[in-house]
Length: 170
Image (cartoon, rainbow, N blue to C red):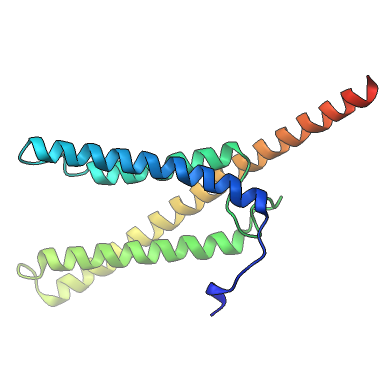
């Protein structure tokens, strides 16, 4: 049960991340409220609007965290080297989950029209393609987010040091 252990956390990081998630929650809530209003006044709401709102809230949270120089709230929040093993494992898990979901959706869509062998071949090809693409894109997103946050954190640290140096000279 290592997942549910209480870990020591930096209170400053927790406070900053909580502010970010609060803004993301408001974006998500406002978007879902707009979607409810749209669906109440017309027969069919924009079908992908919920997905767009969800992604917008996630992107807002990620951008705000990067602007503060934070990647995540665990031990790797302010490290200087990309935790490659951790991010590769997460990327592969995301790729596997997405690949399995795509296989299941395609199998359910074509199970009446194709034979079992054709469905297996199509599901295997779908899984490999989706797994690879999703894993690579997720790892790229992690790397870009990490290096942008690190660059921002380093710039903030340089500005702080320059300000302290200026104060000591005055």
